[in-house]
Image (cartoon, rainbow, N blue to C red; front, side, top):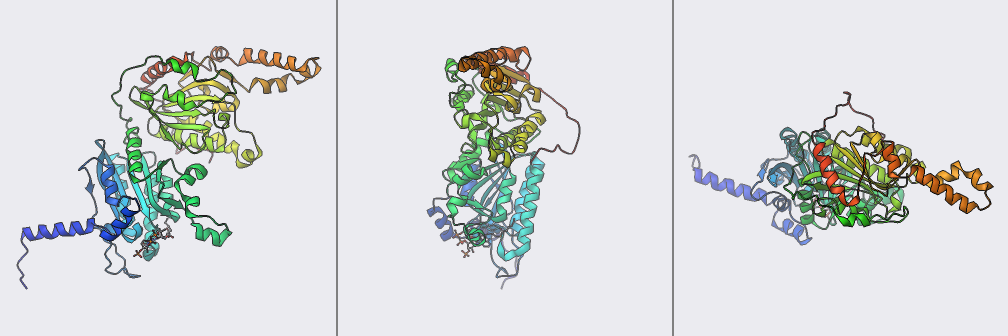
Length: 519
Ligand code: HXC
């Protein structure tokens, strides 16, 4: 055998072959199986997500260190996860994409260390982190080493939280403790081909006797409608990757930057349609998303958690190219009353926007907090307080637009002037009141109504009197709860102007470790 060193040509040839082999992950047959299920492979997902030719892989040659349970000498290409840096719309991101073709994408020690390492690069470079999940969870053969690896990922998730945006895509199984990494990130996008749960149907059957399919338990629709765990449901991988790019376009790369401002037409012309969307009769329903669409750039609104707590609408849009976070009561679901789920959904979104310097616009049409034994037992006091806490603690520009009803504690909880709103605009239909006039008359004038000969007429008269005294925008503007009463059609102009003038807002709060939002 020759002892002469190999030629560079030969070395390069071998390197190319080794790379190609590793890039094939679990091999042709497994990749084809994955594709036949209508999924992309781990590498195709990365390629589809990022700008063409921008992906720099880090750690292709990583190898596991295990020797037990048949792992000695076992080849596990890239240790089952593709990691690296790339650009999306020209902006740096770091990402990890689990390869199900390699030991079911299971997370061994090295696998998780690779993920944690690119996460740290996200932090050090101030760039978002995207984690594409498709895995059987902790690699069982590696025992507690894999458990420890996951622990490092969780720890790093928390250290990134609030510093750089973190987005999880769930494109395959995401079971057991593994589901907690996505849960620690800011947004979860889940495909209809994926499932997520802490304990699967079989364990549940053994422990509680309940019978349920994996899909009904942990499918995307269940996590949107029941648990509120996911933020977006995608039809398939391509849709999920598109949603990820779209979501990132609204966000800054880190907490020290503003979101990118898009070049947008400078149009703030009145939109007459807005004068007729909200019925003047306070109990009549309408879709608040029509109001939002009538105000923001190109009517383009990326709704977050569209299928959860539908009485509260949250999402991203732009005004004159500037990203804004929108929070709105939805009168066509539960009359827009705030329940536990709506309060939690709204608060979390508000805190995300605050962490990443995205101004907040709140559209208010709320009859109050939802009454009910289950709500009280469930802790509406504790959960509703989250909204009060979140708005009060927020220092980004906050603009409140009162469309119609704005009653009681819910008025305050929707980002009122007293909770630090920088501008409050009211439409002519606005009614700011401590409670609805009907309820108020019941409490204050019950004896007077009882004494009257025509009780109904007396009640109606007193209701009208209460309304005209308290429930008008001029009453609220007179008391400085409202800064200006505006024509609905001109809302976009007022918001654009306020956002411009508030763009240099700086607000300092007393230094402390952190406040204690009621959890
Ligand atoms: C090692 C695993 C694995 C795992 C799957 N595989 N999960 N290897 N550790 N956790 C391997 C399988 O042995 C198989 O290898 C290949 O991946 C594909 O798996 P299949 O079962 O053939 O695929 P499918 O039928 O699509 O089912 C996918 C699945 C199932 C639903 C994910 O594999 C499954 O239930 N896996 C176990 C899930 C689980 O209980 N995880 C919890 C681990 S403990 P071969 O070579 O046969 O093709 C845990 C605690 C966490 O996560 C703590 C950290 C926080």
